[in-house]
Structure formats: structure tokens, C-alpha cells
Length: 335
Image (cartoon, rainbow, N blue to C red; front, top):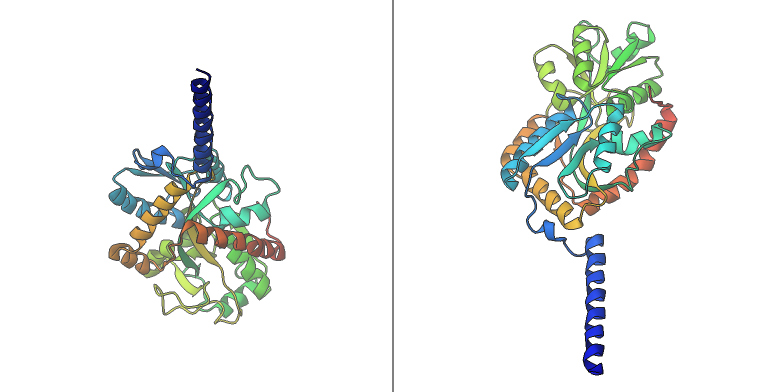
């Protein structure tokens, strides 16, 4: 009898120990949790921290539509604009880490905002799991057609002469704002920053002539350039953009090493199981490799990146100090 009870206690102890070990492994992502086997089993939400019609929104909807086809579940894009995307980030950071709430964000939210704001309701590196960096793109310096300038040097001359006094952006801390401040610093001109709640609103005022100048995301502004509603001056990348090969770079025009790019990536709450994050990353990379997506993004001037979670995590770790230095040097403050 004693031997039987002893064996029972040993079995119970081993069972409890085994269950605890499995739970610990699952928590670290070493073992997939049960729900990862049938993921996804309900609609997926992609939150965008900017208004509809901007670069982030366009990319989110294009990727979302493709993922919906591949994964067999609805992919809903939810816009939560404001505060350089930090409102959306706070919402996703507090969401369950189950793979059904993600955020499409750019460097403005994840690596620039921490250097601008004294306190944020989230930590980009601790509260989020980088899933995949999808695309990057240059900005385009555009002016209202009535502005008598066709080159960067002519824009600089007008600014120094007081004929151009301001520039628009999609909001404080965004790539458009950063590009404008770096341009001011390198060309030694005085321009007043006019922030808007979204890129579409800013472009509307540039097209009306209310504000003469803006750095805008290439896929958003390309149709306006082609229609003649805006005049393109230069691109912000070090190399000419495939979508607008006739345009010189700002660096070519005399501002050596000028480079400000926009990139978009997918982020999930930090508690998201690694197998689920990898599944999402693999699906996005598969989508980016399809001929129709490659053609669509190339036409819009986007460069496909398509990294896995580990690669994107290393990239993020390097990006934070890089942009912190830019923010400090340019004296960029939230407005």
C-alpha cells in the first residue's frame, strides 16, 4: 500500500513539474500555444495611427487585402490618428497578444516619438514585438504650381528672400516634419512648420496655395504631381526614385548626404506568441513577393524590404539612437 501511495505522489509531482515546464516554454515562445495551431480563426485588426488617405493607410489597406486572401479571414484596417501615431500605439500595446491586434507604424511613432516626448504611454522596444518591416520610400519635395522654383537651390533662394515662409507636414515628429527641419538646418533657411492631422489635409492646403511647400510620401503625392496639381522639386533619398526617375535628389542639388526615408512595419503586442508572429511575418513576406504587389508598390515608388521578426528587431534597436541624434540636432519639439 505504501509503495502504491509513494508511486502516486511521484507521478503527481512529475505531472505538475511537466505541466509547469510546458507552460514556461509556451510563455517564452519556445512551444506554440494551443491557439497558434488554428490561427487565424477570426478577423484580424491592423491599427494605423494616421488619417485615411495617407501613406501608412494606403500600405495597410493594400497589405490587408492581400493577407485576407491568403489567410481566409477578414483583415480590418482601423484608423486612430493623432499625436504622431502614439494614440494608436497605446491602444495596440494594451491589446491582447493573440495575433488579432497589430499596428502598422513608421519610424515617427516607434523611433522618433520617444526622443520628442518626455513621457509616452508605451515603450516601443519593450511593449511591442517587431513582426516585419515591409517597405521604405522617399519623400518628395513639392510646391504649389505658382511657386517660381524648379530646383532645390531656387527653393532655398526664395526662402532666404522671404518668398517662401512655411512648410506643411502630416504632424509633429513625422518623416515630413523631420525632412523639413533637416532641410532648414542644412540650407540655413527660416521656415515655419505648419503641422496637420494627416498627410491628406496637409496636401489639400499645399494644393490650394495656403502653404507653399511640403515633403510628402511618394505614393500619396505621385497622382497630384502627374495631374499638375503640385510641382515636384526633388526626392529625399540618396538615389533617384524608380517612380520618378527624372527628379534629382536633394543631395544632388547641393545638400550633401541629405536623406530622410519613410518606412512601414507591422508590430504586435509584446506578449504575442513567437510562432504567431512568425506566421504573420511569413504571410506578409509571401504577399510582398507576389507579382501584383511588387508591380503595385514599384509603381508607387515603394521599395520592398520584407524582414523577419529577428531582423526587424535588430533594425529597430539601431534606429532609436540614430533618430534621437537627428531630433536633438534639429531641435525638434512636439507642437
